[in-house]
Image (cartoon, rainbow, N blue to C red; front, top):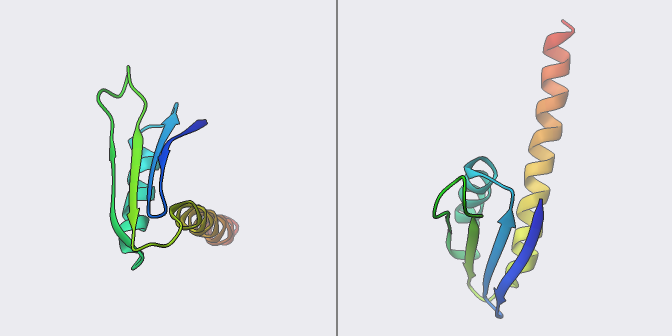
Amino acid sequence: MELNILNKTNNELEVELRGETHTLLNLLKDLLIKDERVEAAFYDMKHVSISDPILYIKTDGTDPILVLKETAAIIIAQCDEFIDVFSKAANA
């Protein structure tokens, strides 16, 4: 993955995520819109095989980079939890 910040203000962020698909972007978007500090979160992908997705975040004034980092940490925690639960089930 290659990440390129296209635009950043105090409450908005536009990020290109090269090499990523709907899988990661949908997960990020779904978690971002559940965050009370986020006023808008969506992504645009012109065509999955020829363009890279661009993620847009607008917050209530909270630093959007901080919000995105915290969202990524939530995803990591959820994956860690899944690994633990799955490992226990697989070894049962």
